[in-house]
Image (cartoon, rainbow, N blue to C red; front, side):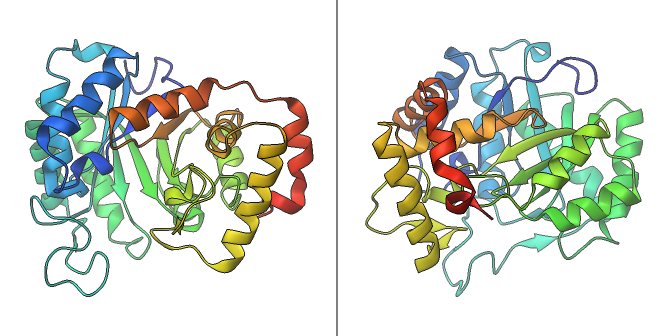
Length: 307
């Protein structure tokens, strides 16, 4: 599937959780194999996820697929030590030991290593990863990706971010084909809506991740809900409870409403799910197909879901 010409699948597999060091290779690869068996053909990964573990696992699991039959996206710009998580031993805060480098040499090396781990000769899209505080420097990486695209190793150039602002800035400064925006178009956060719609109008492909806002929207109630990879604030818990109450009245699981809310946005090209197990994968797929009455969306109203 060419990054530029062919339509992208509506639903894709995000592999961040599949790089977790506490998840075995076997269990991670079972999730990918099940996703393939169930028809998913879009895969998003990054060197950051497990410091390369997710790419290695994905590469092994996709080895039996014809390369033209799926879309493969990775990233460049930030990584961590191989086999480590965001909170490795000795860290006192998340991502304390992550390393950012958007230089041309680092970018080329990153792409080549990703291809090796993924057992492929090309990446359909490479996103500049977590560019938020590196907007000037990441343009060096962009220039190198342009060269790699001319060499056939990269199909499209994108941006991966948890914030709309840096993406909006970069797409005005250089030519991009796509971007991945996580957690910014959900039942709890619509901060990315204008960017998504504007980018779509300009011809960029938009990938949405983080549809459950790192867990709080996956199911309700929860004993310790998380939002943005941290304990959910009381205001988030309150808003989620209101949304869940509306969903319950319509007998719709909150996870199904959260996923289908994003799927219903026509300006979004592909929506990522990020299961850690086959059971979670099947739950996500069931949520994507669940019947939701139109009255649910009307009852949720702007007050319940306002960003």
